[in-house]
Image 1 (cartoon, rainbow, N blue to C red):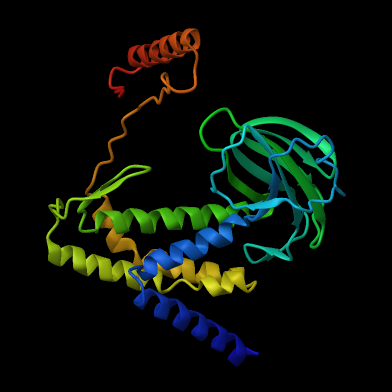
Image 2 (image 1 turned 90 degrees about the vertical axis):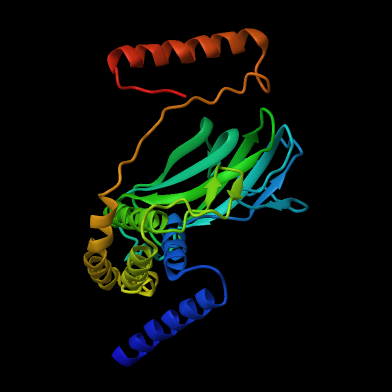
Length: 308
């Protein structure tokens, strides 16, 4: 049994390393992607139709002829029906599913009305959160229907995933660890690009003031620390083994943590007002007035507050 488990771990590490070498991704990138995938418990590939069918919320409705919609895929109807059968897995974050509460988290651009097993859960704006069960068991099935509502621009299913309260402590640890890796990776990068949510501009000019030799050494330590994490243990139902390797990696990251503390993060508040796109004239006036009134109130409360 021990030899079989060791072989699984070795083969998993070989596969990840081979893929990293054949692409531009680092081991840190691959580890973060793997852990993010295991965190999400995401349900992709929903059936959808833009036809307004009165009883598409019923659990036994036949979706014959419906198309498939992927998470983050853009379509452009005024509204659409989305449907998916969700099954509780054997394990979540490596832990056998037993007890606690499992919620279904859904996000739609711009809104939706949700039904679960034929029960109407009501309207949600962008993000909805619904209890699936307070007594979860592997194999339980839930039929989810969402009447997605679009108010302009693309309509997208942004998220559809499970949240289990008994896995939250471990999930928080993993999210914190991923953030540590990403911050270290960014601070130690050659920093030749500027990036927004939609555009990345590579100037080819290294703006970093950190000596290249120091960056290379710390980048090597970052990669070595990431390789200490056994993500396959989490995937195969050994969370204790995974957490032990995560702690080893955290210890190895201390030099990068010390380096990161030399920096100061500056947060600048901003507002996003689509006054020339979706809103009517009077609503635009009210939104602008309310936004700037709130900002002025915050400036009075905090003299150091800044706004863009």
